[in-house]
Length: 494
Image (tube, rainbow, N blue to C red):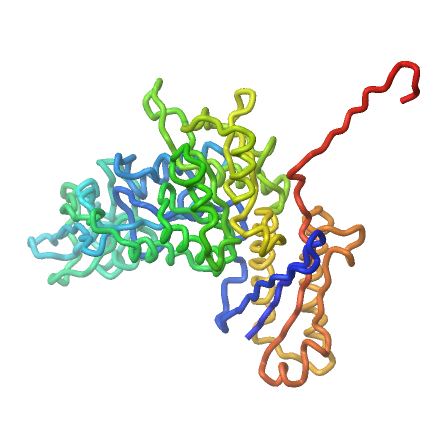
């Protein structure tokens, strides 16, 4: 096992030293793991789509093709629409369905009317009737065939030439986002040239969704998908918040939590001050946002996490993961207003102190006007800055990927492997120091790495461990800007 300890030594509060331990399992991961810190991981209900793994979407059009049209019972479409319009480019959807969800299916017959293949919807729900399967002749006459998958009559997926029934099973497993196949009673290939066959109606059982199903969808986002933000847009329950915070802590991510859509500040502060062991790994945002409707002249209310996730995705490549997507960096490109009356300065200060990040309208511009985590400033002041949290989560993810390169390498007695390990970690941190993500006049003031003989002892090495202790000083943010103006009489020099 490779264990890497990331210790936070904040320069403002040097006595507070929390730590994040990254435990890497003895399983080789792909050498090129995702590293887009603007990725948004979202769980929610939708009309169709698979439930066995995350659904990758890079546009609202792709969401519709894979997850269905906008539904009145869900804010997921509106949230993702806002995310992409605010600058987001990559999202993963974890679809939530009820415990008794049913998948639609359709028999695909051979030329003798026996069942050659059975097409099954990858996701449960009545909208599986919108999925059709059509079998075309292949390029080699009667010896091959082609499968088309249609959604609402439009072809969205098509195979290459297939030779056997098993080829259809293999193709769908690898490439289809809507169906999978099983082999029927017949040993013959499906008949070509017939009409498209619609799948039967399933049921998503959404009225019986519980915390268990929400957690199941969240658990689809394993650590291997890389860093980013995680949300359940519009879900404002305590259990929902706790699930997101726990997920963020364990998967190198940051939870963006949607506060209830209420003008009552006491309700928001009660939520933000509730205790969770992983509270520092998330930020709470309020109020909800107003965006243009899908019909001209109308509007929609969307959870604030969508706006925040989009702003993060837009800002990270330019300013770095530690820089707040707030203030002038948090001006909306799509949101036109907020759903609640503006809070006065005293109330906003109370909310900010409690860890509620307020979205404001200033001079006609909608801005994110807070960047705090839910960490208690009296107990864990070094974790209050949400930028610090995001930086450390990203550093943990990058260090984990670096650690993968040394998994199963021999630890030689000359210290060559340890030296290469330290050099690789140093390269990560030097880049962070050069970009201003960590604080120090010199690099040695910003971070340190200890993998020497007091850390990698004969005992730890004999236990097959390679260890590095990293201490970093994330750069703080300017949450209060002070300007002092002196009125100097004309008889005095300035």
